[in-house]
Image (cartoon, rainbow, N blue to C red; front, side):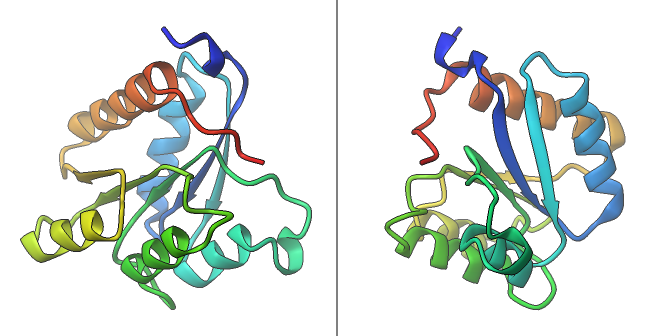
Amino acid sequence: MNTENLREINILLVEDNPGDVRLTQEVLKEGKIRNTLNVVMDGEEALQYLHKEGKYANIELPDIILLDLNLPKIDGREVLEQIKKDPKLKRIPVIVLTTSDAQNDIMKVYDNHGNCYITKPVDFDQFINVVKSIEDFWLMVVKLPPNK
């Protein structure tokens, strides 16, 4: 186990589906790693958060981002592209968690340096298992870059 990750992990969830947000919150709340889960509901708000604009001026950047692709206002594909082009943000791991299993989406995510592509299962128990797997791997095994 990565002892560096025993510190509290700051997670940004970019998700417009309230049900998926609730499930993710519940799984991570019961998880093994102390974490703070911040949620934004669209791509525009995600970019405001990451650029510390407006009400997000004093936030701490996340250690990891869980990003849906199909978002209102600014699409998740564009959000990913902007994150990975920004020198202050590009090292933050971005896990794409989406309903799309389209090959062109998968290729575009990896072309834009997404760190992981996961298709959301529609089954409730499988969704919980996916979130637990993300926690186990990304929060316990992986050494994350500093979020400064």
